[in-house]
Image (cartoon, helix red, strand yellow):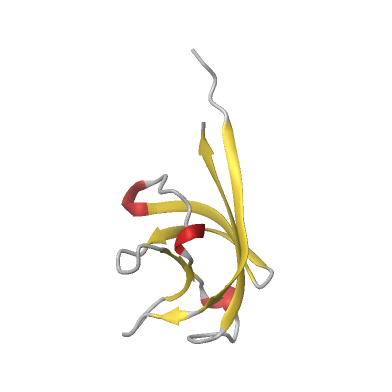
Length: 99
C-alpha cells in the first residue's frame, strides 16, 4: 500500500478590507482574493487553515464565497480587536492536503 504524504502551502501576506454581514450576530470576514483562494478540501466548500491576521494566529477555515467566486475568512472579535467593517488587516494562511 503506498504511503500518503502531506503537503502544505502558505498564501499571503495580503491586505483585506473587513466586511461585516448585516443582521444581528453578523460575522466579520476578510475576503480572500480569487487568485489566492485555496482549493476546497473539506465538506461544505471549506478549507481548514492556520490563519494569521495582524499577527494573531488561530485554526479556522476559509469558505467559498458563491457571490464573488472568491473565498471568505471569518475573523472573530478576539482576533481583530477593535477593528471592524471597513478596516484593513494583513492576512496570511497555511493549509495542508494529502498528496
